[in-house]
Length: 158
Image 1: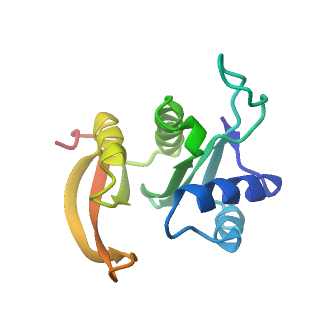
Image 2: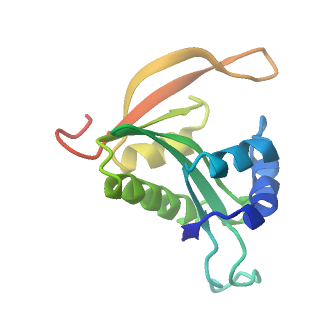
């Protein structure tokens, strides 16, 4: 894991375009970098059984710190690396970055239909705190978002 740099944006965007129905734009990623958000990429080493070369970006995450809380704005893993622990590693890295910045909690929104992501977030200590109606675009107009939070300090979220 390492900090995302401007030279990574095209590779990150390629993953985003491949795995998201309504992806961020190149400008969104550049803005996140320019705003000083916590932007990380997983440019892992060669794993047995995978022809990819070390240094290939396998996933990314963007965290927006605000005072003593943060919001996980975006996280994505290349399709060939999904369900291999990359997403968990990225999430752990981003939560550790939040702890190092003395954040008390991290929030996120996730589509209720994204059951794999919800399971990952729950296993990392996130709990559901609400629903945002019509938050996500989709072909039918809008989809709700499950709002989740992970307490980094103080009482754990239940």
